[in-house]
Length: 114
Image 1 (cartoon, helix red, strand yellow):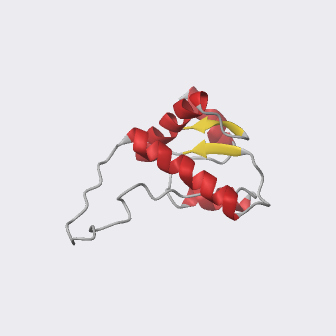
Image 2: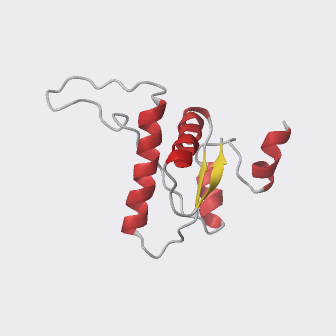
């Protein structure tokens, strides 16, 4: 598919969830992994199971943007350049991040690959 060639040539492929972030860090990029709301929780305070819906796009996009803001606050020495790269469920979140960033720009945003 032609649309996939630019990011494939850059070493950003969706062939493995764990391989791609490692490739990016070896090239000097900072990788921020998002824990979507309720995904990291098995139960609430009342010990009731917390269900995580597969795609809750708007909430997941906010989770991604919050994780970027948190990483920027924690590591001030890192570049302000931002690129959002993901596939599958994360691809939906990345797409919605791109839409949100049109309305609410974030400093250093370069684009999204999903």
